[in-house]
Length: 257
Ligand code: DAK
Image (cartoon, rainbow, N blue to C red):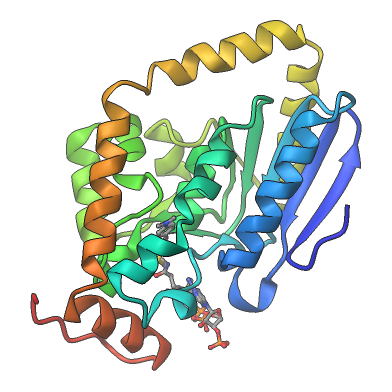
């Protein structure tokens, strides 16, 4: 399997998918997301693979969706790009997925880690939903999944300020399941994957499905609501100002309209 924006390493029964746009801190553009879904779907169908690891590099798991692709878009254009199904397909992988996170996991990068079943964090991991700083809100499930993982009040503080959560806090908050030195992060995920691969594949599959059921129900409504709000922000001056300011490397001046 060969891709422009990903590296795929097979260590049957484990497969490692590495996001590979290091110059832009693995910013998740459309091409990368399409390749990611393609790789995950192929590996999910491959009988020799039983567990998937998703990782980035030492500096970044992923610094978010690619702001260059969104900065000038309007709400209808964002709607018509119809990229949400790509993110849904990451969640739809039936085999266990482990995110091995070093460095930045921001915005869509944090949401991508949240879509995985287990998060192993390195001591350098930095989680944040900084969309609020560029005039939007999380658009790939962050408001809903973090409210469930962190609880309402912590999720409010985290998302409304866009602040960074370091690895130890992520561990304490139940986001990460363990924190290890950066050089051990991928290995720790590998060990976990191998341990899971030793269990009954059917039981693992059903347990995963059952755990995910705990998040359904009103999650759909929440996600539908979130995406409408997200698209709506692309009709605002604040979104244009926030994203342009980022690209022009200056402080944003928000006007609330
Ligand atoms: N998009 C595009 N480019 C990015 C980027 C991003 N998210 N993050 C970093 N880069 C690029 C920078 O522009 C820079 O490129 P050059 O200027 O060298 O060409 C390069 O990566 C290195 O970044 P910096 O020079 O900024 O590096 P620093 O070490 O100084 O700072 C940083 C690192 C991570 C603190 C900083 O880069 C940063 O603040 N990045 C932006 C973080 C951010 O705001 N992330 C959230 C983006 S919004 C949706 C799905 C998902 C989403 C929305 C909708 N649907 C399906 C509808 C998600 C939205 C987001 O994630």
